[in-house]
Amino acid sequence: MNRHTISGWLVLAISLVPIAGISQTKPSLTILSPASGTSVNPGQTINVEVEATGFVHPASEAIEGPDMASSIEKPLKDRNTFQLTIPSTVEPGATSVHALAILEPGSLVYSEPLELKVAVTFAVEKLTINNKHLGLSFIGDQTGLDVRTLTNPVGGILQNESLTFKSLNPSVAIVDSNGIVTATGLGITQVIVSHGAISDTASVVVKHSGVRGDLTGDGKVDSRDIDILEDWQGAPAVNLNDTRDLNHDGVIDEKDLEIERTLCTYPNCATHN
Image: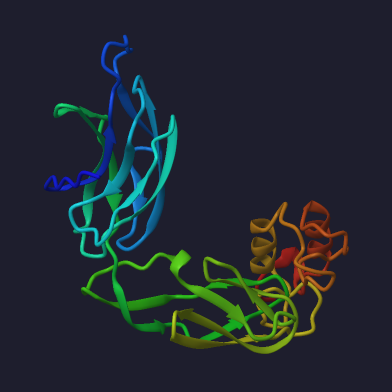
């Protein structure tokens, strides 16, 4: 097996032996997958599928790169899939993979380079929920968690898909993968945000005045409550106890608005008498 180091490239090296005197189509190599522009992380292992055409009686093919500790050699087939590990030391940005065929007596065939995007990785040193005390006024009410992370290097942005959100009591509140907390029942619970072993906790209180149609928690029904209900038109109820679903048909719609207007504390749903 031949080893080749080309600065800035991860190399798929393929050793092939043609049969003399036999007419051959022009040999070529094509990387079928992954797609150009695929994002990868340092240390990640990906499958690289290579197609070889026009070669006769190949000896072997191998995969290796400039910063890789080991290479893999296998008999060449029309298609081969290699497991390529992106070096943990590779710099963020663009890097390339290409296939290389070595023909006797030393001529080379290259595939078109395949560009990979090496992601910038950040070590999370601290995770903080800024709004640690959440108050929700009705079943179905929502709010978002304000999560901040301290990373090394400083300034790194941690996407929500890197965070784990969990509610300790889903019968009071649930939280989705974007950190949106939704009230599902009256009571108190906690939600936990974590990244690996680092975590922080926020408390959630869901309370209601007991006044039917009151969505602001002030004990009255007025234009502010109607505004909230209008914002939720067409949304499904979170459960049978959803405070917004006044007719309990499973959806917040115009029928609920009609009922809400009959529940107003003051004439014309004014905010005061």
